[in-house]
Image (cartoon, rainbow, N blue to C red; front, side, top):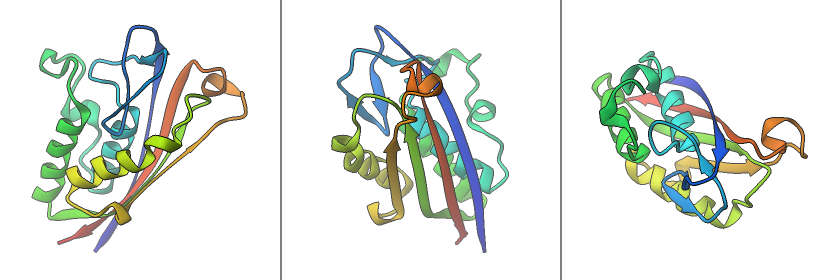
Length: 158
């Protein structure tokens, strides 16, 4: 049995924060603002996985009102999500994500992001697709105010 989930997340770019996407620290003059490490890619992927098996979203599992998640590594949180979906009998069949950012250029980091997510989810990199695009200088991402990610996850019953 297959189930599909969609995830979306967005975070504002600010000074004095690291830019972390898919567990990869990317050199850039700004980083993403958030309660955890603000890894917008990991957050969208987790929401897609959780949505596929009707477990809500990461805000439900890891509320920003809980200090134990302040500065949390999102890949550690993703391990918890994988455990939760496994308890319902599901595993990742494939993940597809699109990062929407005017800058920085992300192509050099995509494979490392894929490897990180595949390792955490217990699947191969062939099951994880990550793409990056701009919005041609339109909207908040085009104006370099933030980064957004759309993700879908196809989960299969073990």
